[in-house]
Length: 162
Image 1 (cartoon, rainbow, N blue to C red):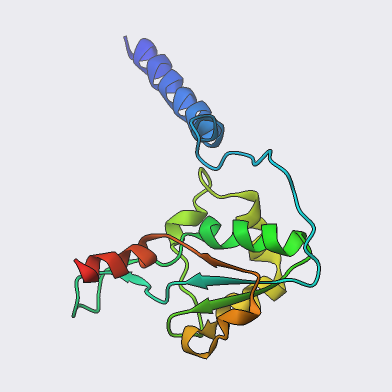
Image 2: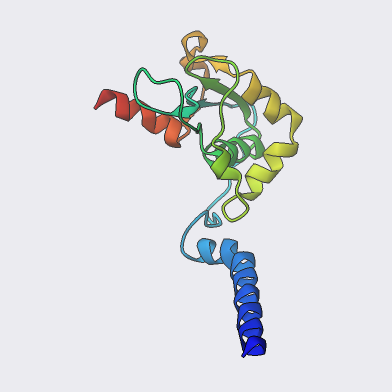
């Protein structure tokens, strides 16, 4: 009986390991972070602006403690590299300027994107995220495109409004 329990336990552990290893592929097959297969553009000399949140904690108005949050990593990294790889100059701004909080959950192995991995190794990207422009100081007329990055931090604005 003890041998059967050990075998079943081993099979359960093996199944859990296989499932965990397959989870990124399973999530992608269900539509999470699909590969873009549309046209690519070259836009050298154009400027893009990505605007992110400065909010780094999930909490109620007036509270200072809560779960860490921020922009969802891929909501910033994917458009950044799409614009960058098209030859555009990309600026990053946030409500307060300075360091942009990134939701730590967005870098979990089952949902991290290739753009997220690339951004973590890219000194220029990191510098822009750590020293974002303050939105009040941005001249929006200088940009060919403006992208608003999402995540729980951006949702906090809706929460405050409601």
